[in-house]
Image (cartoon, rainbow, N blue to C red; front, side, top):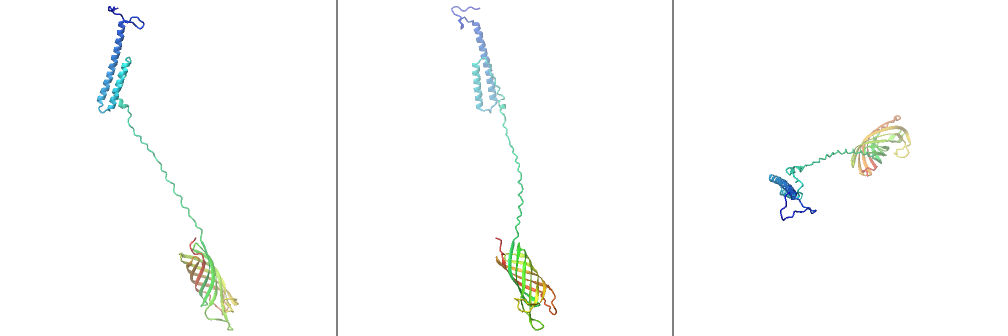
Length: 301
């Protein structure tokens, strides 16, 4: 051991015992070595940061300041904790940690289902229009080649302004010509009446005018009368049955919604029983007529 120099008092420890100067020197040397090592490591880290900053000329100034602040914090940490090894941070690959930007494209597939076809429109079946009528009729004709007149009435129904079915009645009301005289010189009269089914088919139906084909099929009788009057009691001397068929054409005009007038023309075919000789009266012949009908002939309300 080396003796202390004269006149000095050796340092004492915490318990008052003297401290060995060589041991204190060794401990101080170790601390100085550790601090030197820490400073060397801090210097190496600073050099790496500076080299990274020099290589990255386009780097942001804020990032350099952040690096310097980090280095300062590391140096302070090394000074405070000399025994702790310096933390080395590798900043050379820091930009690789940032994930690249990614674009997310969302594709939505919309299935457009075609709309179902519209249902076919239902056919509206309108009920048949039925128009009834009743009227009077006058005809000019020839009986036994003599000008004569027939008068009567008719009625019927018209369906959809096309088909007409009804009935008619006619009676001989006037005859112009030579008298009928019996063997005693007495003047006699000729009477005829018949009725039947009236059928018609409308060829054209307008607002005012209509054209139709018509026919009357009927039966009746004719007789030679003691009276020359065309009305009243017949007082028949001789009577024969007959069947009449009268095809013709009718042209009508609507006067009002409830009245119309029509003209008709055709031929009357008559088949009859035989007269007793020497009588032989011809009952067939052409005719023209005037009809006045009453009913509803306007538009449907």
